[in-house]
Structures are given as structure tokens and as C-alpha cells.
Image 1 (cartoon, rainbow, N blue to C red):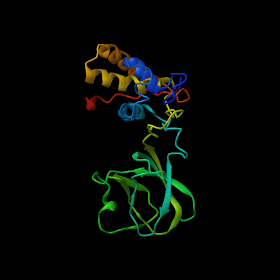
Image 2 (cartoon, rainbow, N blue to C red):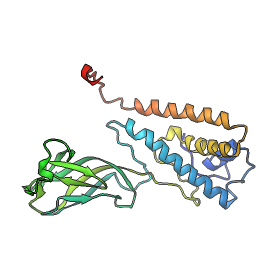
Image 3 (cartoon, one colour):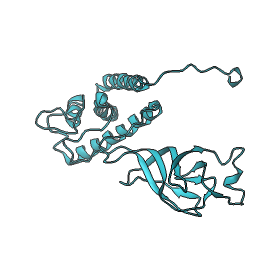
Length: 245
């Protein structure tokens, strides 16, 4: 089930689970500003960890935190004569973690998906040959925090560049109460288990082995669940290339 950040009445929030896991008395964490800040930081680090092993399992189901107020798609203007475009944060200042699809609007106003291309590979000379050919871009290279287009746009287009992204989650603050993590609802307890284990490990508490066991068990369950969640996508067998061994 989904779990709120903190509920001092029902005692079923992440903070209250941590208190029980680590042998604290009731409100020892929720009522202590320093401890609450430390555990909030550890919970947010747990969010980063869970994203780290969930993103690669997403397939065609794009993971995103439902606490965000928009979709993980950035639209910006295509500028005549400009090859490179920087993407560090989205419109709400959330850090962009990855770009996985780019679309460009042509001079007639129709969007077309363009292909990814590594500038350092063969067939990518149009990115750097100095000819600076203009037209409608057909390929893009991801470098640093931005993208480079193979053809320099020969026209201006308002909202002409559409970028599909993965981004960081919406993190908790110490003042949160009813807020929940906006994904992995079946496994929200992970956000209490990991900080509990870390605290027990740091303090050499007797429950550290039990917490580690529960943590690893839930991590495996998360990977198994998200690795098979695309029930509407037909799995295909791919031939094995002996030369790749």
C-alpha cells in the first residue's frame, strides 16, 4: 500500500515505521528536529536508489513521480542557426536524468521523431565538419547537459523542439505529513527500510541483519515486479549472435 511521510495519529507513516524499526520511542524522530532532518535526507536518498534500479526496467512504460504537476516532456523553441540546446532542469526546476526521445517540428509545423547519433561514431560528420549545413534536423547527439542537431535549423519554430525525459522525483521535506511518493505504491515501505538499516548499521544495533534481509528481499521484489509490468507488450525472442561472445 502507499504510505504517507508522517502521521503521528495513526502511526503508519514512513517516519513512524522507522521509529519502530530502530527501537525508538513514539515521537523520538518526529518530535526531534535534528533526527527528523537526518531521516528525511536518508528517505530521499532511498528514493534516488529506487529510481536507479527501476528506470532500466521501465521498457515502454515511462516511470515518473505523480507528485509532479506536468508530464516528463519539455518543449522549447527551435531557433534558426542554433545547433545546440541545453537541458539541465525541467520547467519546475527538477533535474533531468536522461533524454530518451527527441522530436522536431518541420517548417510546415509537423513533428517528426529524429534519431540519436553519437558524434564520435562513423557517419556523424555533419555535426562537426564545419560546413554547417542547414535544414530540418534528422538526428541528434547527447553531450553533457544538452543535445546537438545534425542539421542547423534553417527556420524558427515556436515550441519546435520536443524532448522526452526521465527526471528526479519530488522529494520529501521535514514539514511534509500526508505526502506520498508518486510511484511504486506497492513498495513504499522500502523508503523506511533503507534508512532504518542505515541507522542500525551506523549504530551497530542488533536488528541490522534482519533489516538488511528485509531490505534485500523487497529490492528483489521491486525488480521482479517492474521487470514484468508491461503486460500489454508482446515479448519477442531475439537471435543470439555468436560473434558477440
